[in-house]
Image (tube, rainbow, N blue to C red; front, top):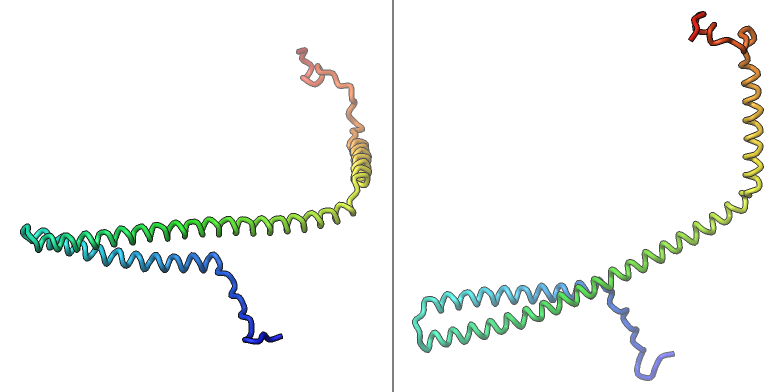
Length: 170
C-alpha cells in the first residue's frame, strides 16, 4: 500500500569489496596527481631560492614553499591512509574468496561422499573375499594342470651328477 507522502525508497545494495577498492584507488590516484603537482611547484620554488639573494623576496618564496610542502605532506598522509584501506579491503576479499573456496570444497566432498556410499552398497567385502578365494583355487588348479602337462616322460628324474658332468668325478 502506498504511503501518504509517497513510496518508500528502495535501499541500494551495499557496495561490494571490489567497488569500494576501485573507489579508493581512484581517490588515491587523484591524491597522487596532486602530490606530483605540488612536487613540481616545490622544485620551481627551490630553483627560485637558489637564484635569489637573501631578503624579503626570498622569505616570501620560502613561505610559499613551506605552505606547498605542508600540503604535500598532508596529501601523502591521506594517500597512505587510502593505501591502508585498500590493503584492508584486499585482505577481506582474500578471506571471503577463501571461505567461498571452502564452501565449494565442502559441497564437492559431500557429493563425493554420497556417491561413494551409493557405490559401497553394491560392493560387499564378503563377495570380494569369496571371489579372491575362488581365484586362488582356480590358480592352484591351473598350476596343477600346467605341471601335469609339463612333465617329461623320457628323462628319468634320478640323474647322477657324475653322469651330468660327463663321467668325471667332481
